[in-house]
Image 1 (tube, helix red, strand yellow):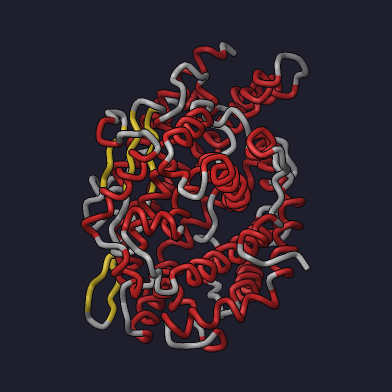
Image 2 (tube, rainbow, N blue to C red):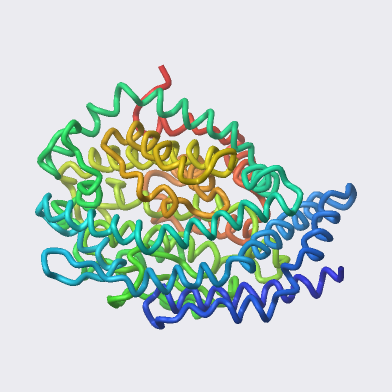
Amino acid sequence: MELHSYRAEAEAFIAELSREYYEHYAGLEDDFAIEPIYERHAGLFSREAVDELRELAERDGGSADDRRRLRTLLEFGVDGHLGLATKSIDAELARTEAGLTLDVDGESLGYRESAVVQANEPDRDRRARIEEARLQAVAESLNPLTRESLEQAHALARDLGWASYRTMFEELKGIDLEGLARQTAGFIEATEEAYGPILEPELQRTVGVGLDDLRRSDLPWFFRDREADGLFPADRLVESFQQTMAGLGIDVAAQANVTLDVEKRPKKSPRAFCAPVRVPEEVYLVVPPMGGRDDYVALFHEGGHTEHFAGVDPALPFEFRHLGDNSVTEGFAFLFDHLVEDPEWLRRRLGVDDDAGLAAHAVAHRLVFLRRYAAKLAYELELHEAVRPLEDMAPVYAARLSHAVRCPWPETTYLTDVDPGFYAANYLRAWSLETHLRATLRNRFGPAWFDEPRAGDFLRGLWRDGQRLDADELVAEVAGAELDFSAMLEDLGLNAG
């Protein structure tokens, strides 16, 4: 294999695929034409190419960076091998989701749009009817395609010589998934007693019910926290982000390599995203406006991704600019979205001296998310071990999520609530990484680190390295610490005892 040519074509493939992803999920085009892209670059993902990459990655020799480049390149090849095999299903799934409409009380809602409507709906019963319609659409239209795609991915993992999809990605990512699951299970156990007292007051304030009466359909409204909207004016959204970056010495308006997309479109994905088409030359920041605090969190989270990718050294090898441990870029994303609950940032950027309970809500919100993702990881470890039929996993999913969040969780989303390649593990590791990054910035530059150009210099120094280091190595370099999920207990104001 001629690695230089392989890497050049791999970068071209990512640019084409990412641009198609951006245009479809930004609601700019209905079609999701990924099949032709895979066909043009099919040689990247052939069985022969994957086998050769695996052989190269398993050889001893070369520098540490050479070895990590080959391992991440192998992960890219395997991801593409799976994507090539399932491209038609995945494209049909995206087109189906984009075209789905729901009938709720005689009103027609787009499936993607319905998530935004539900989060802004004050009527509990109507939220539940939207949920029922969404679940019906998932069961009838999305689950069959999702199941077919997942079954193919599981079979391909075994065909490539791994014992299971789980084993394959644990090796490719270089993450001890079982060890991480033990840490996150410990987090659920350690927060059992505190969960109710932390969550209950915020549920009563926002939803009007206690934990015992909570429905899953209430959670979008709870997370949305519309009462806080007055603290987050729409006309300050982009300005506050630009001012924050200016405090770090970054002029967003002058970044020719960044496009900010905050327009409303009916078929725009309800999930904000960053599309790094060509790193660092062409990066898109896409936010679907929902109003209030959520807009700020979404913009700052995806803005963290954007500034990270836009700040990468263009001279770095392809693998370190585009590939690697995504826990790192997620860590930078969480670092910036955490500002939206920071009292010093609120005072300086939005003139908020009284947060009206925002801090308490933020802790409750994060606790729900952390426990939910801990449960997702445990579930996905079972799901991707593939020792029993997929349909048998639906009650396992519902039981784990119901226990973690403490509200009845539907079985229906047992397949659609799964991101490929154990991305839940990346999120969990990123939350831990972010606590260390934030503590380091506060210790070095003060509580208003976001107003310190020296802090911007420090971050840009980290961003230039792309994802050459994984999250464990970055924590060791920045904070001289180990990546341990128990750090989240202290960050939430709890303790392991």
